[in-house]
Image 1 (cartoon, rainbow, N blue to C red):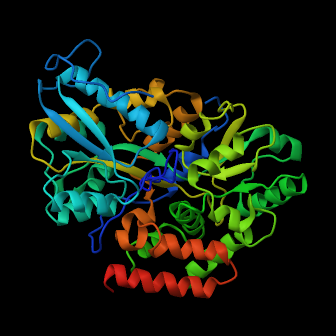
Image 2: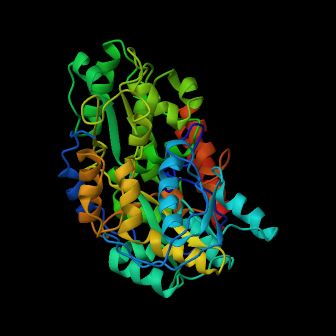
Length: 476
């Protein structure tokens, strides 16, 4: 997703993952992605079975006053124009426009939203070169944010934004938005990317329940296949979906320490731990009949379709799909009711425990303007988080947000687990990488894992290509 690719999300075309984007090479990484164990405990406590837009708006008068029920004072910005760039399209765009509408209403500013496409780094780079960068952007990868900061494109958070950040976010999330000790980013949107959504009717028809480990997951998939339904939907046309599959398997199997080493390229992609993870993944990708549309069909399926085809019509094309919480936005585009027709369980344990991989989209300022700083301040507040939480398909790392704001119990419990995990989580690995390796369509890890999906038997060849591309991107 972006996410980071929480960059990966609901769109009408190929998208960012919960959200996603790109970023050039060398980058410094923090240890903000600490132990996964406590996060796992929080995720394991989830009971993930409960039930689970608009125009751009014109200039509105107002601003300055803090009305009843609001948590942050915003300045008057009447007549000021602010441009915001992010990867969100479709339903996510509609939800975010509600947030911008409220900001306009309270400040008097006019905000123009511009979608960047998956390649956030390329989009922003071209704008900076021409002197037309947006006021605020939402890099969907930690690596993108740090690369922008390294290039000197970002403006530090002002006092008001820093005050909201310190009050509402744990140190780990604050650190993810910083570079060389300077705070630049506000992680407005986060995601839990270690989930499997499933069609309850198809599970019932096949007589299966929620699997707890990888062996049970594969057995469940085969039983569903035997019932006449291709069990697993994979949006392989969007390469970030495949990095999510790999990261969940790898974190669970190799553990957090190895995960951090691979994320920083301190061990090579030819390491035996990568061999083991790809071998496990090949048990799914390489078994005929387990993927919706087969391997070739999966490679032609974009993320939004991978979700909706699992819950649409009288004869859905798949029984389950691996996706972050943001898949709820796509499910809402079908007739399926979250918590009834569509339920979710934690990604099955491939090793000793289930993984917990997170992603996120951070708001950063590319112009040193009063409007940009005011918007960052608003986005760091509970007021802004509440708006999208109520719209659905969203979770926030804002620890002060009232969980009652979430649209349904499913999202409420996922968000609660994220907050309870504190700083004990692992951030999406590819989102930490240089964009040329971990965040560009048609190249690097995205392309290498698409080739692996095409030919799951070639594990050694996949590792060799991954290491070649990683070494080039990391400069070592």
